[in-house]
Length: 146
Image 1 (cartoon, rainbow, N blue to C red):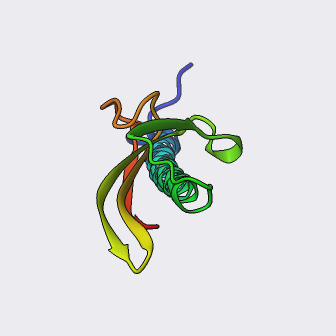
Image 2: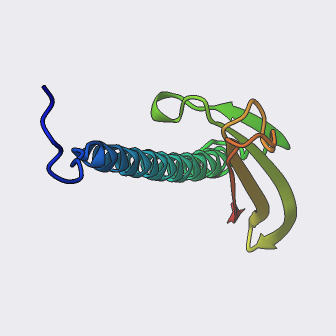
């Protein structure tokens, strides 16, 4: 025999906690994706800054090399254009050095020569070089007399 109904049937509500768990998982996924993109952009910016600093050091090294060629050798050597391949921490960077004799004048018994030196450091096979997204170039110049 069947019992008489004692009022409306109460259904158990299920799934509310499941929806909260799903929402929490979606939020964690969104925050994780944001964190990964943030870390990636910081890493890219740091890498570009490091490349720029190395290109600047490569250019300075080329400038110092040219100064040495002019001032420290017995006869001044001023190469019209020279590309230097750099070692150690600057491996992969090049420096193109240009030198121009800009004038001569006499001071007493000595002849003084003036030179314009320019050095371009970059992370390509030749400077100035490519235009890809990783290309970095820095240029320095100086005047030297001897």
